[in-house]
Length: 499
Ligand SMILES: [Fe+2]
Image 1 (spheres, rainbow, N blue to C red):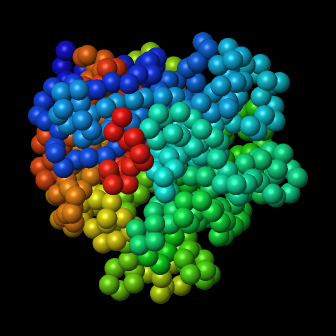
Image 2 (cartoon, rainbow, N blue to C red; image 1 turned 90 degrees about the vertical axis):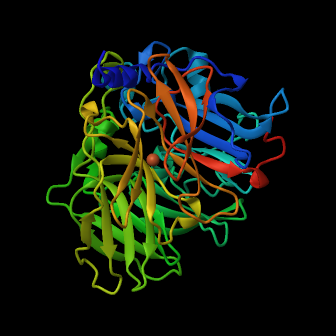
Image 3 (spheres, rainbow, N blue to C red; image 1 turned 180 degrees about the horizontal axis):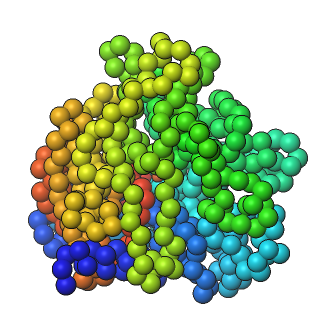
């Protein structure tokens, strides 16, 4: 089998369901665990794309499965080891469907049985808690952008609570809004202010009166809704940015048609481009001043790399730009071996001058490199001038634009360092700095790689300086390509983290 076929086969097989929840000390098959690397990598993503005999209709509808890798704990032989655990998030909907033995809820691309009458005006989507996981002030949250976060025990991974921050995320809007969306959405891409430790996030509210909600969480407890920005149309956004003076939101010229959704069509089939629409860029002053708005070419950016303010006060935003809102293969088709091409994702720089008039078109430029997604940077450089992005990337020989490599991209020189895992499929590269170091390439890249030949995944620890292998730890099972994770270093970990 040639490499191209092997990558496709690997990508298809990676989407098979995870049927085990296990605890294990991982066996190290190459290298050794670095002595300075101590802490926990939490990661989230769909663990299965079907339940009770029904395959879901979209890749983002898969049931969330959180995994944890406790790295640097002591193994049975007294040596540093990696302890692994995985657990599905027991959302209310997950539990109810398990009990019922059938699918009870709609989701982004999934409908209930019963056609029109089974889905008409069913506005309660299944919270799958599958997109990311963040640890903040001792609390671990599994995140899903359409609804509330779930509080997870950071040691056992037990699901503790559907968390509304003491009622702050209860919808207190007009009656129709409350009926259709009793809970306010909490995006899966919150940002931490490294100076204060406060958490910033947004919610894309697509109820009868669509709006953007901005949240700040101080001391890990109190959530404040700091702004409500009305939207004339239910436009889509997945990620946002934080710099010392601004919160930054891109609203793309695609919207969700509410009527077809209410009439029973899955939301994924109700997304439409806004004809003649531009990308709207909102600069929202953190000091409470008026929102500024600028324009850019029509596109869709699922994930941003980073943003910062330059010496002239201009805001620089780097993102993974696609020409349009992407289609995703249905899991049923994918598992049957049908793969459609993944559109090219171009790293793109936006330069926004707050001194220019509202409505001004911003400057856009390519950052070169291969098609790239799931970008990460050294955590100390989030919101600040930086030089290196770590991504999953598609090499020119990768079929269908599949991401089979990890890349380190120098955003100043546009030089790319590539580590190809083909026919393996690597996940998001989480950058972990070496303790005490502020060098952007001094640390490790943690990524979970799926190997189709063995139908098993492995945790790779790479040296961020050259992407060489430091350590490979074999998992007892496979993990489907997931979404996002975060590292918690040992001084910040909860008691019992190493168990
Ligand atoms: Fe995301």
